[in-house]
Amino acid sequence: MEAKAVARFSRVTPMKARRVVNLVRGKQTNEALAILKFAPQAASEPVFKVVQSAVANARVLADRDGIAFDEDNLFISEAFVDEGPTMKRFRPRAQGRAFRILKRTSHITVVVATPEKAQVR
Image 1 (tube, rainbow, N blue to C red):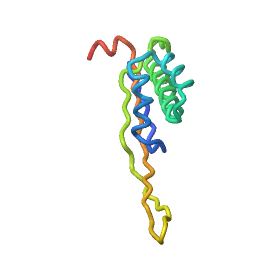
Image 2: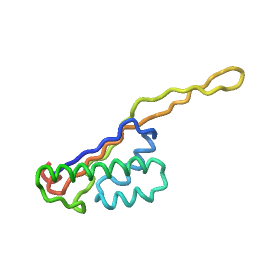
Image 3: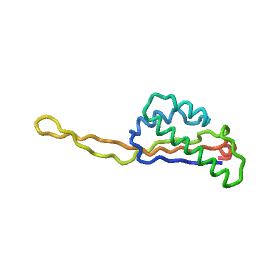
Image 4: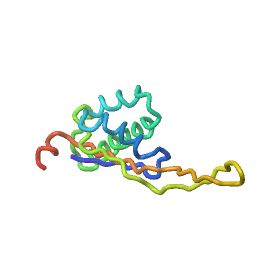
């Protein structure tokens, strides 16, 4: 069984989000949630929410299909961060100039699966 969750337009830069996602890729979901809960990076909060959402989506899919669901059996099979749209803002500088500020956004995607599903691939 495989379930997916996506957080789009998250206001964290893709580079910073990728650092956090790399910590949990391939780990059990319970272990990943524990790592994210205590990670000092600010990007760990949106990634934590996406992993929780993917687990909840897996639970809903299992209930719908009538499959026995064990949360301890899930692991993060895929996790990646794509770049979202960049908001452009301007900051006043000396002598009437303006400098551009780039406020970057991210699309965070997490796919959780059971070990049987991963072996079929």
